[in-house]
Length: 297
Ligand code: ADP
Image (spheres, rainbow, N blue to C red):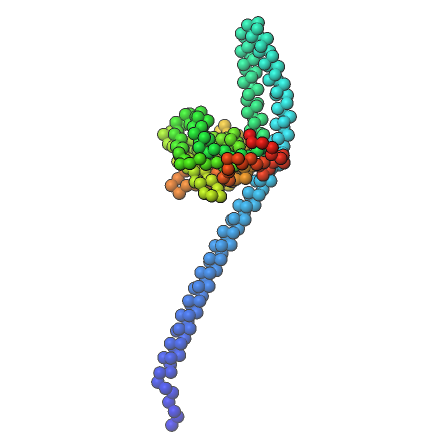
């Protein structure tokens, strides 16, 4: 009679097979999850790369546009100065002869000169090459902001909420340039708001960066628009120029800082200006500046 196999043998094989299968399923599951995580990471890196590419392209375009703009602005400014001078002379002669109707015409000419000068100012701001940077007192700038932006704030019936800083905060910029950036952001925020809403400013001071946030309660920045807002001449407004954010971007870049836009989780847009902290005696040429700095502005 042949020897019988041990009675437990088939169960052992089935058990082993079961645990191998479980192990296999477990490893396969982990592999699948790793694969998915990797795929997610690749997609994220692709998006980041596309964003950086777009940013680089935007910087290139802005630099080229800035060069052109600076050339045109200088060409326009010279004859404009002469027109202003002759208009002043004409005004004094007409005043001496009490020529009322002629004086009213001169007022119109001067309004035109001022309008052209404002365009030249905008154009020059696209090429902020020779800016000399110094320690700007943020509290002073913030205190004057409501008045500087009052035209749009009043027209839109929007409140501006400005924080009180517990201590003096100095940032590397130039006063008129930084005011221009902030007025631009506040104007845009007010234009995106409904009457009665508030535009809120916040300041975050860290040892290596000062961040200024301009928040609104408007519709925010839809996809497809958010990527384009810093492009020159991009506007969704009927009477917009599409230059406000381009100029702000260029100016902040000239301060060695960054301007970024995002949607807030609770709704509305947030624009963040990140600047370098400064000391009271700081005087520096901006990163774009070719000129050597000599003295504080
Ligand atoms: P303009 O104000 O002349 O349109 P800007 O360069 O200042 O030019 O702004 C470009 C576009 O960015 C605006 O037309 C608008 O679509 C969008 N934008 C800017 N700020 C905001 C904001 N706070 N909320 C929503 N959209 C905004």
